[in-house]
Image (cartoon, rainbow, N blue to C red):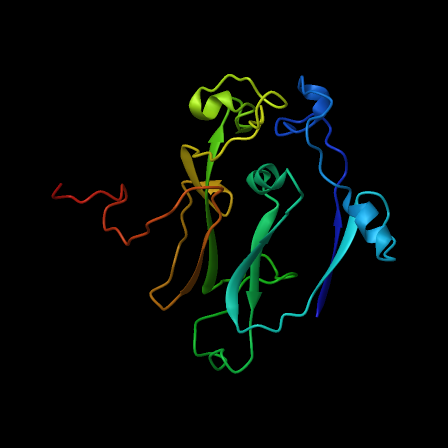
Length: 214
């Protein structure tokens, strides 16, 4: 059993704060999320404002999973900003015996310079502004050119995009990453952490990933 806490301070008007009503000309009857704190109070759970506690039994088979924030109406922004990570379950009858696969994996408290042979690789797509900050579209018009009318005249939100494909791939948050490896076996844990993009991965002899005969 794992218990984890969560604190979500109010957005401060940063680049990804596209859902802050004060930053948009939204009508008064624009849909708003239901307060999760009010829901918790109804069940006798007492949280401080902006916090929550979740419990996970971890009773499924050994697996490569991932977790990410799921705030109602803000999931896409929080995942894009980096609130996501691996959640690896080990042990049990479905797992392989110890040392059957390469290790160790990164762990909290490892000293600098530790050599890892189990490598988690979170692959995501991101776009950047000229100053290096993250770019994310702030209007529905960016997606398909639809400039309105929006809610309440229609059901279309002025800020939500059906999907977003960024133009730069990152691995574990880094653009153009590289890893020095030894002549030995490695265990690679792959995660497609993109907001909307499907990935097709392959082993390439060329650094560009292009077929030299094409």
